[in-house]
Image (tube, rainbow, N blue to C red; front, side, top):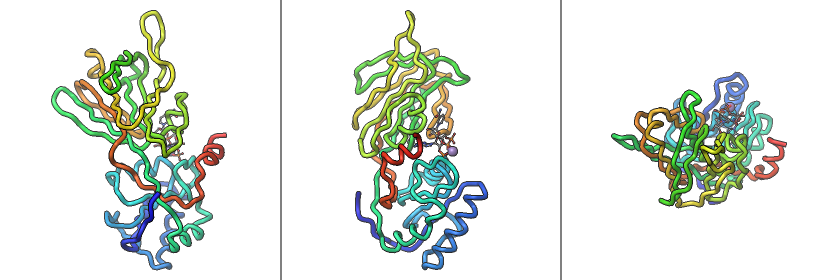
Amino acid sequence: MEIFTYKNKKINIIYNNDNESFNTASLLKEKLTEKGYIIPKKYDYDAMINICVGGDGAFLRAVHDYGFPEIPFVGVNTGHLGFFQEISPNNLEEFINALDKQDFTIDSLYLVEALVCTRTSCIELIGVNEIVVKGIQSKTIHLNISINDTYLERFSGDGVIISTPMGSSAYNFSAGGSIVYPTLGVLQLTPLAPINSKVYRSLTTSAIIPINMIVNLSPEYRDENSILIVVDGKQHKYENIVEINLKISDMKLQLLNLGKHNFWSNVRNKFL
Ligand code: NAP
Ligand code: MN
């Protein structure tokens, strides 16, 4: 948590491509303009806040589209699960009042980072929820997994999820992983349909990896060209992958906290 000072009155409103999000964004723009805020026509890299109207998917896309900005995000949820969103379209007034009084704090979210090295070059990827390493066209893949240079296992199965604490309630949760409190600096390595037989042996449960430790995934030679990397739901395909190193990023993502978000009540409300 840190104190936030306004550097200007510019607010970006980013909205999902559906009627409710469009209407909510229009209303929000009207109300904010009345209060003297400036809503730039195009995304402004110097704005003080990014408001994202939609669901978690819209939020994740906005973060990626604008290159993981330092500008804090706040979400308005329009008819989706909205795990990241704190505002509902019927409490816009309350939100604007809080904004006026600077009655909020800022949370920093841990991000997951991957360095994907092929035979010729390395590419960096970054995720808010998770980075998934799996086989293309539903193939079984075989990955040698090491943690900080200590060999752990030869994984065989659909793939693995490397999730952030915030992403622990997303794909990770569906795959049987645990929900992790967002302030904990850990990654979760969760297997996807691990094979356990007389031929293959893989961990069947998640492993929790502390900050500063590196998860190294080296696909077997025959799998070099059958690997898909999925970052927050977006697919990336590279030829001749030799290794993938994953860790908690030094970069963080800022999220406005209006004091309405109690993590555990959010878990109850959204999942139970
Ligand atoms: P999507 O298919 O709409 O996402 C699936 C669901 O996950 C949506 O209901 C989404 O919320 C929710 N979600 C996203 N981030 C979450 C989080 N941190 N905690 C709890 N729920 C969360 O696709 P999308 O909206 O573009 O989201 C991409 C994410 O989908 C990926 O990062 C991955 O975690 C997740 N995913 C899940 C599965 C699975 O559970 N089997 C498979 C593939 C991908 P909204 O309805 O608000 O968008
Ligand atoms: Mn979605």
